[in-house]
Length: 131
Image 1: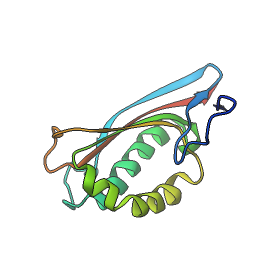
Image 2: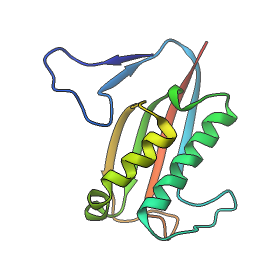
Image 3: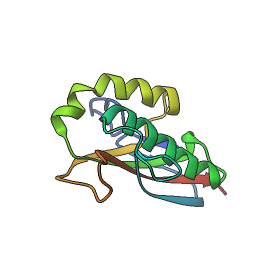
């Protein structure tokens, strides 16, 4: 896996501009919300929902034989921009605990609502395993 960073660009914070991977097995992870394996939300707060959603993404990747380091793309959909900005530091700590210093190409999209209530954040990802 190679991080793509065009010459002269400022370094991104918390993500990569692009990732290039050799052909291999590809895992497409559907949007994961902050519920547990029984599809029960244990919290209505953003921080624990983010932590659980990220655990859920990693569980799907692990089921396919991958690890956090195999994730090359992630998209986050969040319902509350002010709440997200207020807890960004806490989310970074959770990220580092689960993902280490691995930062895939990422997008953050703020939306009016998610299908699964009372979900506040949803994460989807693509992982590539070596051939």
